[in-house]
Structures are given as structure tokens and as C-alpha cells.
Image (cartoon, rainbow, N blue to C red):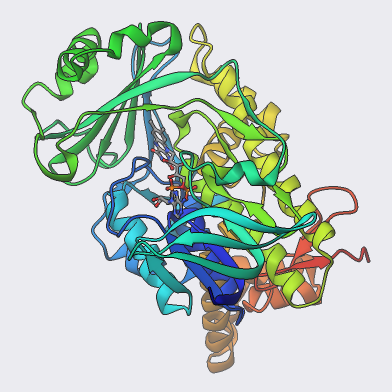
Length: 491
Ligand code: FAD
């Protein structure tokens, strides 16, 4: 059997796999992505976060395509949750990190969203092969040196690579090859029963695109608008109540809906979809877990292959795409000869665990139902150790931007700031004394005058981001383009 050679082989073409493959190929490396299914394929996980849409997707070059795809705009979330009987709503836009044009995410049909990311990977130079299932890795001592897969015609194939990335989600067993065990949380062990409805009610404008999450005696419901008429509806029940979703799924879902007055009301004139991609009532365990280790020499886990945390904050695609960004930086740095593998991948793992840990720890307190939302906001500030207010800390955590990573928040603002700065400079150059006023009113110029540093000026001009500190003592910082790691040299 002839063995092809690539720099990187990625197993799985979900958001995690497409993202890491694209960001590595964009640095000129040879990347092969093997996907078991033929896209578009169904997947659950429809509610996105701003960090994915405006951070990672902008780096991938698909932010404009997403904006033009007609996905419902998610400005935040509406919860009937905790001690207060009335629903409460949060808006991403109250945080300065997600202000203005970055203050929303989308609700997406995953078949469409994942296909956009996979096609984009192809257009950025990734060799994509669908209908190809990765079965095993090739090892040479401690190191993973390649992968074995079955191609679309059923032939056994082998490929060698400097890195194999497992982005094959939570069902594949490939992750076991990284060693160690998968640790399941005792706290988050729920099951979800879900389907799709036509004609459900909508929240009032301007929050009609929000995710609606409603707690009830047996657990909670998600209610996600996927178009003007189509809604994704799922009941999440605790493991102790698993019998409530056994047997006839239609009957079980109807019983759970009847238990929850707000969802019953929203679905009162709706009809369940019974044909096509959305016709099936599905059940998924949403047990939370994480691996002992997220990498070994030559192999890296991203997305659900590495860890998963309870879906109430829609963090799955964020963790998949963010971990893919972190992995891509590490691999790009190693392939460029800038860093050794251990230094680069330890940074990936530390940052990924931190983000997972923030969601995990906060979610534990979010399941305390006898308190009001103010208590959740306070907890979010405690968990993130954020300088912002309580409510901003909450919104930043569940917007996926609590790490303070410039790449997740600033892409749009750096561009907008540059435009504002350029316009102010043009105006001053062209005008008389009065024209000084808008110049000094510019937030960009105010910042520049306050800091007056070379690096900040570069940031304002879009050549560089704000000066960044390592997330951990002795850790690395991101390169100006966000694609690699750099050693940190304190000045
Ligand atoms: P996946 O999206 O699972 O992609 C993995 C890909 O690998 C698939 O295309 C699969 O076909 C392919 N594959 C599998 N095995 C192989 C193999 N051997 N070889 C090659 N390819 C293979 N997340 C959110 O962001 N928002 C939500 O609202 C949300 N709701 C959720 C609700 C529930 C009930 C659950 C269980 C999860 C939810 N999630 C949500 C989480 C979300 O589904 C996942 O976190 C996300 O899809 C992970 O992306 P991924 O790229 O890691 O894996």
C-alpha cells in the first residue's frame, strides 16, 4: 500500500476539524481532512456564541458569508430560570468586549453552518475527503506518525503526518489513542430528547432570535428559532429522570412539554416536523467529560473529542472552534520551527482547560435554582476573576470572551478603529482649526494619547493587537496575526 504524506491529518470535518485544518493550511502547510459522512449532514448544537462568529470565523474568512446566510440573529438569551418566576433576558451588547457590530451571534442549521466551514477549508487549500472513516493511528514508539482510514470506495488507506488531529466528536473512539482516560462529571449527567416544530411562537422584537431556556420540574427546555417558522426544541432531563424519555418518544416529548407551561404556550399552534432531516425525534446523552490529556507527541484532541460540558450555555461549538484555534497556533509554531512541540502544546492544553473550567465551574452554580439572576452574575465574576461588573462578567463568560483573547473579540473593532482613526486624520489634514474637535473626540485618538506607545499605535492601525500578557506565568502570547505563539518578553 502506498503511503501519502501530509504535514497534518485531521479526523472529522465538524467545526473543530474544519477550523484547525483551515488555520494550518492558511500558513502554507499541507493538510488532509478526512470526514466520515458526506456533507451536508445533521448535527445538534445550533446556538452559537459571538466569540465563534466574530473571532474564529473572521479569522477563517467566513464571517461575511455567515452574515449573508440568513441565519436568525441571536442578541443574547432569555431564561426562565432560578427563583424568579418571570423570564429574564441578557444582551451580549452590554459588554464592551462585544459592543457594536460584534454584539450578536447566530442560530444555525448545523448542516448548513458546518458545510460552509468545510467548503471554506477546501477553498483555503485543505485536501478534504468525505466518506472516509479514520480507524486508527500509526505509532512509532511514543509518537503518532500517521493514520489509517477506509476511503469512500471501502479501500484501506494509510497516511503519514507530523501531526494527527482527532476532531471526530464524541462518538468516535479515536481519542483513546492519546492515552489516559475520559473522566465523566458526576454532576452533569443528563439526557436530551429533541425535535423540530413549524409555526412556534417567537419572543418579541428585538430579541426574537434569542435562545429561550426554560427550567421546569424534570429539567429544562431549549427553544431555538432556526428560521421565521422552524424551531429546535429539546428537553434535557436529569439521569434520575431518564425513564421520562424512554419508550415512545412522541408521547414522552408531549408529556414533558405539557409539564412546562411556557413551552406549551409557545408551541400551542405549532406542528412537529415529521419528514426529512428534522423529522426524527432524537435522544442524546449530554454527559460532561474531559480527557486526562489533550495531546501526546504527534497527536492532538480538539472539540468534543477532548471534552464536553453541559449544553445550557451553548458552549460546544465555541469550545470546538476555540480549541481548534489554540491547536492551530501550536502546530503552526512547531511546523515553522519557532517552538518545540511540548512548549507549544502545553500552551494549547492550558488555555483550553482554562476555558472549559470556567464554563464548568460556573455551570455548577447555575443549577442552583433557589436564587435570582443577580446571584448568577456575581458567581460569573467570581469564576472569571474579571474586572468588569457582575452582569458584564456573566455575559462575557457565556459569550465565550472571558479569556480576554484579542482574536476572539477585537477583529471587527481593530478594523473599525482603523477606519475611525483614518477618517479623523483625513478630516484634520483637510480642514481648519475646528476640525481638531472630531479628532480629539475619536475614542481611538483618546486611547492613543493615553497610552502613546508604539505597540498601541500599531494596534490602532490594525497591524497589531493590544499588547498581550501571557494567560499563565511563563506562558506564551499570540502572534500579531493570531496564527502562532510567541515567547513573552516583558519590557
Ligand atoms: P462534531 O460536530 O461532532 O463533528 C465531528 C465530525 O467527525 C462529524 O462530522 C463526524 O461525522 C466526523 N467523524 C466521526 N468519526 C469519524 C471518524 N472515525 N473518521 C472521520 N470522521 C469522523 N453546542 C453549541 O455550540 N450550541 C448548542 O446549542 C448546543 N446544543 C447541544 C445540545 C445537546 C443535547 C448536545 C448533546 C450538544 C449540544 N452542543 C451545542 C454541543 C455540540 O453539538 C458539539 O460540542 C459540537 O458539535 C462539537 O464540534 P466538533 O467539531 O468537536 O464535533
